[in-house]
Image (cartoon, rainbow, N blue to C red; front, side):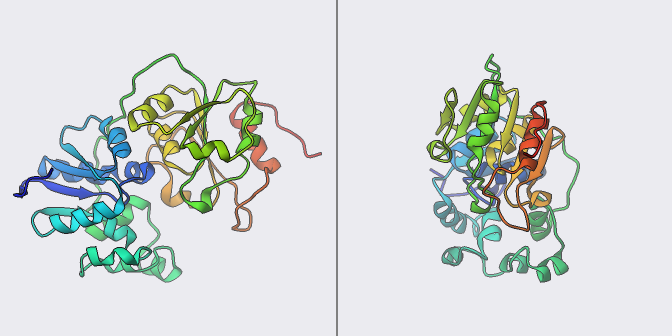
Length: 301
């Protein structure tokens, strides 16, 4: 339970999405910067997200778990009048979740009220990285900070991991079974995600499934992989954060906005053609994966 008397020495920080790992990794530097300014910050997020972020071992940040977005926005509304609060979720959801607006501030930044990617919005405000859009709206300039590394518990479990499930429908691809067929027999292969991943493809025999894991388990399973292939999702962001070799396949290519913060080990390829999501496993994608896995390229028959 939160104390009834909320300390003015604390910053209360609500991320853009309390339950999305990728969004929280993309904007973690904002919380880190704010915590350095006040020396103590309370970060509100889901249990899974909290367990992932705790692996940064950042002493200036405390965590408070919330079950879902609606609980988080209601809690933020109660705290804002009493304490210093940075509520990025109202900036993120104002335009496309109108049923939650009764919990948001009246004087919200005008950009939050518009479609972020509409040409007129981009003309006025610019097309920025995800975290920089929030920095613009809360007037927080970027400063150089040493971003910590996620701590992992090492064990000998090296394998190729696939991260097929995306919460954003436009990013969901339909040919993960073909990718698995290419990998199995050449690599010890695992699939990580929610239980729904088992229904996303006709998986070949020999696949290891790691489903419905805690945040701690996700960091350790992914951290002990040798190589990863994933969609535009939070698990791919964990792999990038851990600086693992990662092929990130985007259904809709908005990687300029949402690519991982740590991306030196990331190869990005888009599956879209003519701005539409592909349903077939094209030779171009197949050869990109073959190249990533150091396999011979295939010729068009």
